[in-house]
Length: 166
Image (cartoon, rainbow, N blue to C red; front, side):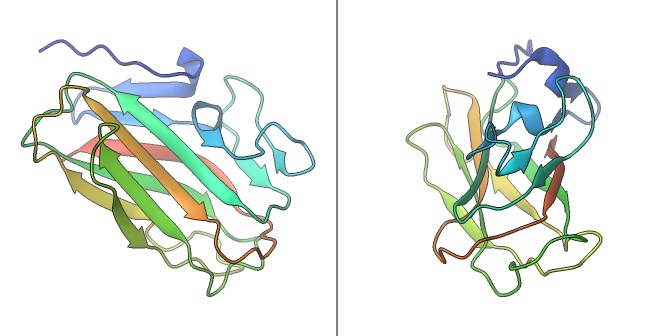
C-alpha cells in the first residue's frame, strides 16, 4: 500500500520513518493557538529543530493532523507529545487533556494527563488509539488542551509530537 502523507506544514517540519512507521511533527507542523503571536509563543525558525516556548496563554490548545493511507482498520497508533516543564509554572493541578480521533466524524478519545511545574521532562504524555472502523479518510486528529481553568500558563516547551504505528 502506498503512503501519501498530507500535511498543512512545510515538508521539512515533518519527518517520516518507515520501520516502524513513525511521523515526527516539529512545532511549525502543529496548530498552536496564538502560536503566531510573539507575545504568547517563541516559535522556532522554519526547518529548525528547536522547541516552541510558551511565554503565556490562558487558552492552551496544540493540535495536529496526519493523513496517510497507512491509517487503516486494525492498526494502532501511539501519539506522544515531547515537552519539558523545567521553566514552566501555573500548570500543577490543571485539567490538561489529550485527545485523538480518527476521521472528522470519529469519536474523540480523551485522557487527562498530569503536568507539573518545574519538571525537566514531563511525565509520559501519550495516548494509544486503535483504528476500529473503516476510516476512508485515513486521517488522525490529535491535540493537547487546557482551556477550562482560565489561568495563565507559562514556560512549557514543545519539542515535537511523535505518532508511531504499533
